[in-house]
Amino acid sequence: MKETPLATDEQDRALVARYLDNHQDAAGALVDRYQQRLFNVALRMLGNVHDAEDVTQTVFLNAFHKLRTYDPRYKFFSWIYRMTVNESLNMLKRRKPTIPLKDDLDTPVPGSGADGAVDAGTQVGRALMSLKPDDRAVVVLRHFVSFSYQEIADVLEIPVQTVKSRLFTARERLRLSLNEGVR
Amino acid sequence: MLSREQVELIQQEIDSANTPEQSAALRSLLQQDPEARAMAAELRRVAALFGQVAEREAPARLKRAILDALPQPAGASPGALLRWAVRGLRAVTKSMEEPIMTRKAMLIASAAAAVVVVAVGLITGFPPVGRIAGTIGGVQPAARYHGKVMTEADVSLKNPEIQALLQNDQVLHLVQSDAFRQVMENDAYRKLLASEAFRQLQDNEMFRQLQDNEMFRQLQDNEMFRQLQAQGAFRQMQSSEAMRQLQDNELFRQLQANEAFRKVMESDAFRQVMENDLYRQLQDNELFRQLQDNELFRKVLASDALRQLQSAEVFRSLSQSEALSHAFMREAMRSQN
Image (cartoon, rainbow over all chains, first blue to last red; front, side, top):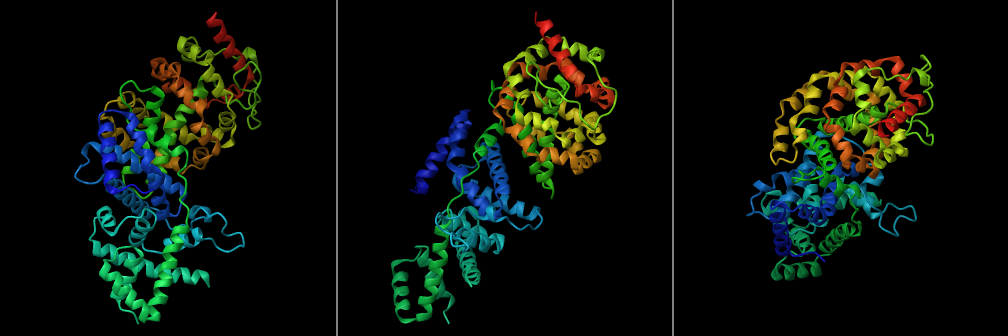
């Protein structure tokens, strides 16, 4: 069950305070809370498992390094998701264009693809990589993290209207792209 | 043709972002307009596809890698500190925004780790190609070396610095420890040291030059490496002059481009060693830490004598030699008695 943003933020704050009080177990707890989600965001942004792992690790290290200067007025989860998206965007800028391996794009849905048809994961992975990175970020946060428009706006530090605009444009492209894939 | 506002209504409905009034307006639209119904169906299908994509498990090693790389509180194990140093280098270099930084960071981290691997190998002095019961490694001569054949009688360990090291209590205790023996007997470690790429790396002039390089040594000897528990160490390292110089060092760049070096760092064997519990146990081992802190050990690693020895054909033969293994263990046991 998805935690409410309020509950999430309170627990995060408690763990951050504990970590800053030199309780190393809090670091492990924060990693446990976020590694899976951040890794999947990075994976969907980058289409590559190794890069996603790299980004996730860098994000956590930077986050722990900057915790003492972290402004508690902002939500921890918005902050760390923002770092993940930004780090992924940076990696996309740095790297040369590559063709993602099929295995990198997705985990096949159990039961799908047995008849040789392209499974949902692969379809979505390919379609995502066809989007502009900024649009992709909005789609990833909406569909893989289930963030609201406002939460996405907070993470990306853009107006809600821009979130909507990017999301709608991206979905329109995805719709066309996925339709092409079906044909 | 649907207007943008109508499409937005459909999209917002999918995202549960419509007000009750907007939802009612959409229902009315869908009842009246087949095009709107078709569009809504397609967009729902797109959204549903995302719901079918399974979340991918984060790699099991990820958490450990993150936690190992964090600054350790006072009293943390030296092995953890060492791992943090290596990972820290990676994070530091990553933050320097250069196009090839990921690769470079990995190589710097790997280079630091490789020094540790090489250092362990140096204590025993041989890549353990095979295994003979009762020895801690070293066996068949490498086919590619056809220099003087070493016999046990030739193993005199004449070099005074090497001799001093072998007579050092910490060294002896370390090699007699279970953790050390287990690492030496570990398949991945043996495969790495026995690999052609690793040999090529050791033979590689650039790699030797790098080890000789004053800046590289400065970095290795940097006091921060030994005082990493201090909270400010990470930031200090970021601004380390030695680090910057190393980054700019042409030799280091050349090394990164070296095929043998890359092969070693990217090899499964190397990764397995780095991730191997036994290797970590060794790093956590108090004796190993003492050895790394040992001035004599560092002196030997930095000594011209050792470098000359390493580059000598006779050392290569010797380093492949079972005789050295016997001699070393004999010496170790003798000192123990």
